[in-house]
Image 1 (cartoon, rainbow, N blue to C red):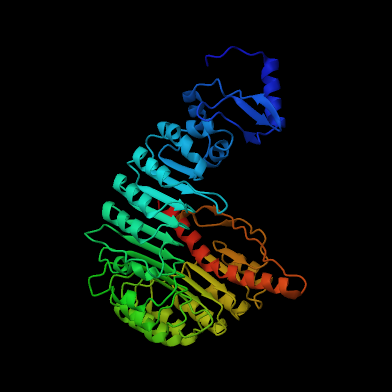
Image 2: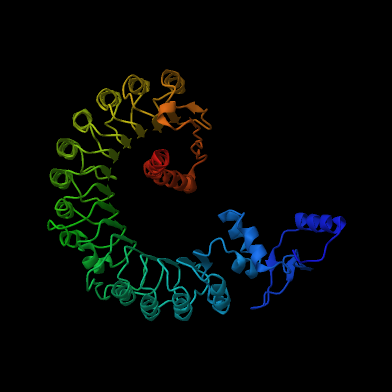
Length: 518
């Protein structure tokens, strides 16, 4: 490679040296990238310093993403030479990175996706650095800002003027406000996806965020905002298809009422930990194209609001409801869903006291139901499970957690649901280990996951299904030992973490379906 030949003994010595000592700190010259490396407190020669950049870049092409990230921590030269990710760049956005940015973007001259992250204890890059990024990377289509607290509205405005091809912007834990976001919406006409989380610059006295002309905005996510109502104009946009509002303070009924006058294009709505009532659900019912609706931990929503949604949103395919501790949604609202939402494919009920009456109606009328999850309900027992097993002929994936069912209900599933391929049963004390083995012998093509399964055996799936051999690995639930406040805290933390079971389960299921369909 253009270097002087080395003897076998020298190669062996170098190899042994790098095996025994791992680089802990690298001190390169500011721009020239010197060849001195501090290894375990001792200075030593960097043997990659004489390699041409193109040769080193070719080597990096054989590494995966994780290895490249670890290599970028060794020295700045390795970070700049790594050409495998030249279209996608993730940087530790501290203030001291400014002096290295000209040399860095000389190497990364075709970046279209960039992520700038800074931890809480450090000063982030400033407006000057952000403007430099926008000048050197004018073809950016995706930008993620995390913890960049030194960036102001002025910096965001200059950035927007230079990056007019931007399609996706995600910003979190930053200090700029409405002026910066308005500048992005004004100059980035191609912006399709906007995610705003924990933006401190949006306060009670902040100006409204407007869409002053036609926009291509398709997705909007608002999370942990004090005065998120300033996004009212964006929520009411007729081009918006996906809306997520999570844990934003204040009432949102009036904001939702601005949407859905019959011209709304919304197909997915996610409301979580939000002050919204049946008035807001009535506004959602005026969006006839809604296919996915999540109503999670909204204390003021009741059967009346759900009924209004079910009567008008007849294209609904995915419905997630978390009743939390208030139990205002039950059989009455679910009966309306069974009557009007005949295209329902996925239903998740958490903390909903549904009975045989509503579940029987859903099982009978919703013939396309493929994914069902029932969690934390004291009214769902063996009778309800037997009804589901008898009438849900299309059901493929079923998750039940924290319900008073027994082995009788599980055996009923084995006799019904001919298309069932995955079953998850958690925190149901009456379900024993014997029925697990009985079920696996009865339905050998079924993937079963239950409490106490540390490692499931391989389950053979029909060849026609196209999934081949599948192994499920499940970690046992932690046991809290001892009393006191610490034990109580751990118990509550475990319960809160358990609420994510259904969401993560369906996410994995959806990913596996997408993989198998391609």
